[in-house]
Image (cartoon, rainbow, N blue to C red; front, top):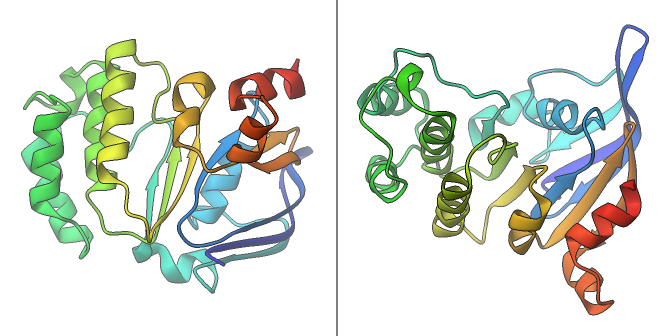
Length: 226
């Protein structure tokens, strides 16, 4: 298993962001991590990325503690990971120094495909910044990709470009977990969906099984959370 969680809870003071989460994700799956605001999605991704620790329970990523394998994990947090002064060439130089698995040619091709302007990140629109960040993260040959709201708050054209960019960079041997509120647009990417609500897993199902029942992922989302 690439991801294994057993009885994971996470508390921030009196607030319990995760409550007894059990989850296993094998190699090669594309998983939609879905739920309303405050469901615990970002907290779960941060734990998998080794950015914070669970309060109780056990977490294994790529066979060990997440921090042991951070070099094999590509994490796109929400909001973003770029400083305002960074231009695409500066992002490239930084990534080459930080990530041994960074693929320069793939990054440059994605910049062109995603139509990212060669300007500092602070001068870009939200959609343009999201596309630059996506190019950075998906230009790594990681074993686990964690994408937190890659479509959040961007216009329709940018969302389509980002989705096309994700499809363009899929690697069948890698595992990808995507948190998004844009369920209708992104559901075609998902092989499996995990629904979180108030820190608990309330549904874990293969997307194809839902479709075989005549239900889309978006329709199921509305049924579960309405």
